[in-house]
Image (tube, rainbow, N blue to C red):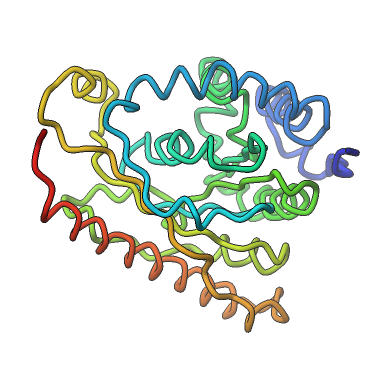
Length: 275
């Protein structure tokens, strides 16, 4: 399986600081080459995923696994804690035809700028938190690479899972069934790659790692619920890959689908009782 044709954009490289350039080059090698991604996912499959699963596997419940297709997908999840995407991937990992080639676009501020962040990215995901998303004034230049990279990777292999939060940032409100307005980027990627968006909703996670570990050994704690839905209907938008209105429409449909899964979770919790 040949890797995608990754060619570093000189303009992008020139805009990166030395530490960012090193982290970006490492991420590209481990995510956009065949040997690198196989190495990355060997670590993820055999070490990171089973290790992280120990934190929630005793109270994890998955609904809708039948909606995962045997092809590359964008997995869109609501965002309230640091652990949302990890929980969804732990829940779904064994339901793909092959161990997925996982990609999680992530803010660069920690994982691509600080040595601790680079090390943590390697440890907990095999550097699958890639490509980096920049939030400073370089964003308009650097973030065009995010879309291009995600499209390349979705077209490269049917094992690609690009995991994204349409809200773009954590919703820190108290109501788990309310959502921030979605960002258009997920729609832009989906229409350019013609990849299905699978909506997911996760709930039952605390906001701190300490609390997550405490709940591992606490009786009567609510389960961690992961709901998956059918692919968001986008067929009528695929012929408008460069239309910003189409990008926003795709993102809005995705958030609507996630909200519907939230209502399914609300109904489930109305009948749930502690064991």
